[in-house]
Length: 479
Image (cartoon, rainbow, N blue to C red; front, side, top):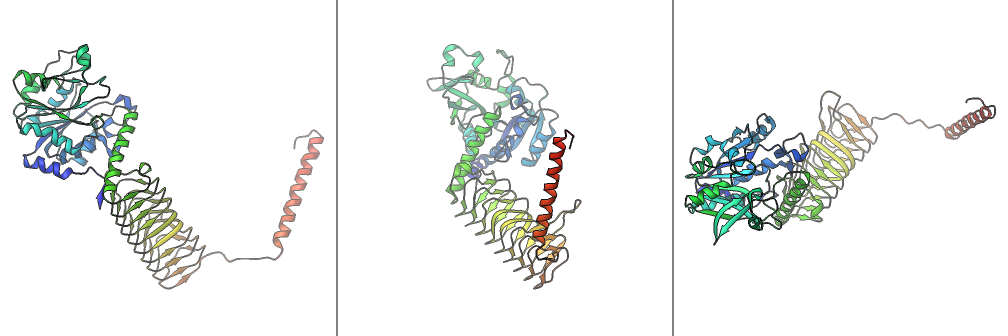
């Protein structure tokens, strides 16, 4: 099977492991006011993983042996996300916001071990594990500092990477740059790697003699050059280096992540008939020869086995489909749905916390919740498992080869035995033994000619009411 996550990550991790690993410092203390949100900016999600989560996963895959995350004090939800995705990471509050170098030094305790340091940003989620590994690589070749940079189409707003004869001289923030320096298109992506032998010394000497009176991490470059140390530039595509500051940029980042995931799924053997309409999660797994029709959404926790077909307008979340399952169109699979080999679900079927064993089918208009459906069972249109009594959930068990007639309600807890048959329109409240026939509906009463007599009575009553209203109107009286 092929996961939709970043490809090639194991090789990056292997590179990091071979070189003893490094310390990743992730800056995640930004307020994100332009997001117009009560949620911390770094917790906004792309492909159902937070931006911070993307960064934490990428640096770990790149070989980080220690993680330190700088956060705004009191952001417990950010701390919980760190604990969930990087349990061994240390968390460092940044009480004052005095610039990026000041933020990195908030994690001083993590820097004192003398490992190489890679600085990442919690709101720059598109940087891959491979790029983090490339950023760290020059340090192993003797560089004291490595900066990630790109050729900007429009460099306005970016710090400029200043070079001379191929040597890096400095990074100049736009507010502090001369007119000549502002014409430079080589732009700072913000991410930086510092040799373990020099990281603390460089960071501690950074001052705030600039327009914003802040301690810029980028000033480490000029300090390293002044010390006669080597500084490397690592190129990256502009789109990969983009940070997210507002909802528009979040949407652009989502589009980029989705394009990556779709491509990985297709290269892994899945057919996406209209790829631009299919939305995947970072952990979506699609097997070989899976066919996904247009307008399908895959939430977290979905694994689709080989040869499955997902028809149009289906929505899957926390579901597992085994080989050859065929679902949709308009199917919804919710938490805990398991479809074994050859299961068929037709249009407008919803499955929640239920297992359908091999060959079972529900061809249309059905809800199966908190249920187990035996192999080869046939669930008729309009069948509902009534699993909730207003307080607790209850399970329904349907045996192998059972047949549930259309428009039936199975009131849980209840079981229908193997090979049993439930008549259409039944409300089943008691267990049905195997191979039994159960019919539970009101007895039909037919009265010849009663419909005609009833219609005549209703018409006469309606005419009498209209006549009364007309008479009242002529008399000027209220009806």
